[in-house]
Length: 161
Image 1 (cartoon, rainbow, N blue to C red):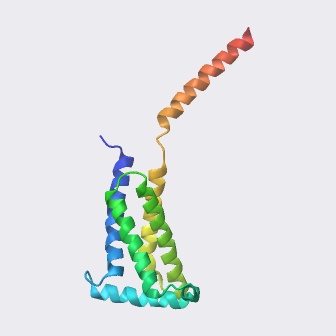
Image 2 (image 1 turned 180 degrees about the vertical axis):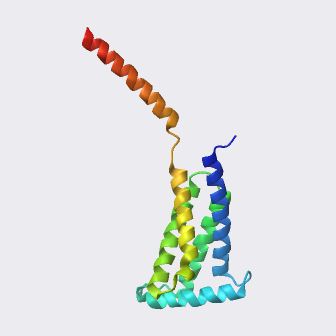
Image 3 (image 1 turned 30 degrees about the vertical axis):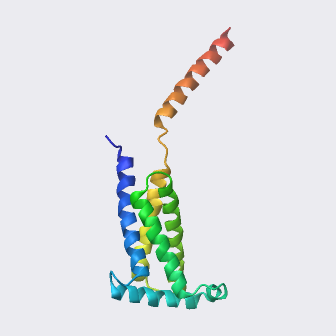
């Protein structure tokens, strides 16, 4: 039977992956929702205006939106379908994207309700990464304790002789 840790990681990976595929797709194409796509275009224009350094290095609002949307779709697919360590890399990249999005929202002065989703999903990504990076050291710790007790007993025998 799968451990609760494994079930949690799989459930979080699948749910987060689907969410980011959906949100990234909204940033890339109006096929899912024309209103949401238009809102994303407007929002990224305000982010680009607030960061004039982006324009200096050749990153327009359209390119910024497409980069973030592509990262979200790609990492979402990895979180949903790919097993192993690539999930942790995708999780970390998405966490960085969420931090950047939170920075953008703060930069333009958006109210909390506009970026609450980024905050919540950033916390979920952090939790998933922390749970995934935990090791199952409990049996090894017991073995180590037993070895330490045996070593201490041997030292006591040597001292007594």
